[in-house]
Image (cartoon, rainbow, N blue to C red; front, side, top):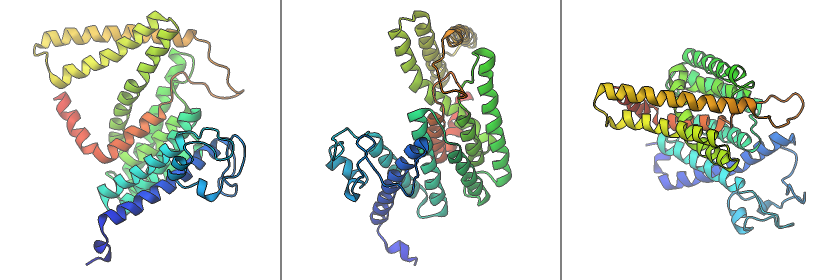
Length: 334
C-alpha cells in the first residue's frame, strides 16, 4: 500500500489549499511588480500609499486582510480587494486540480498553468496589459505538458495548435485596421492563444475561442449598453441591445428547438442576421468616429475591451469539461 493512501484526503486538501493561498499571495506580487518594474524577489512588501514596509504578520494570505479589516495598519488606506480575491481563486484552482486528478504530475502542471492564467488575467484587468514573459512561460509549460502526454494532444498537435492560435488571433486583431482603424485587441491576446493552442491543439482551441466569445459577450455588452445609454447615444445603445438579444435568441432557437417549421426557422435566422449586421455597422462606425484616448507615445492602440480574461476563463472551464462541451456542441447542431 502506498504511504500516501494512509493520509486523510481532507488533510492533503488542507495542505493544497494553504499552498494555493501562498502562491496566490505571490501572484499578486508578480502581477503588480511586473507592471511597475519593481524587483519581485529582493524588495520587501510595502504599502503602495505610505510606503511603509509590512511586517511578516501583515502578509498572511486572507487572514491579514480580515484581521486588518481591509486597511493598511499604518495609514489606514483601504487595501484593494484584489489581494484576497486572487489568493482565494488560486487556492480554489489548486484544490480543483487536486480533486480532479489527485496527487499527480498532471495536477502539478495544471496548478502551474492556472497560476500563470491568474497572473495574466490580473495584469489584463488592471492595465489591459499581458506581460510578454508570462505568456512565453505559459507556452513553454504548455509544450512540456503536451510532450509528457498529460493532456489530450501530443507534442506535434501542440506545436500546430500554438501556431494556429497565434495566426488566427493576429488575423482577427488586424482586421480591426480594415473596419475600425485600430487593432481589435492587443498583442497579448495573440500570445495567450499561442500557449493555449499548445494545451488544446487547434481543434480544442476552436472550442475555447467559441466559449470565450460567449463569456465576453455576456460580460462586456451589458457594460457597453449602460455606457452608451449614459452618454445618450441611442443608436449605439440599440445596436448593443440587438447584438445581445440576437445571440440569446439564436441560442434559444437551436437549444430548445421551439421553431419546428424549417421555413419559419430560416426566415427568422435571416432576419436576426440582418439586424446583427445593422447593429455591427453602427458599432464599427462609432469606433471609427470616436476619438481614441491619448496613450503613451508608441503604445499600440486597440478598440475593444480586454479579451484575455475571457479567453483564460474559457480555457480553465475546458480543461475540466472539454469532453462534455464537445458532446453538447455536437448535440446542439445535430
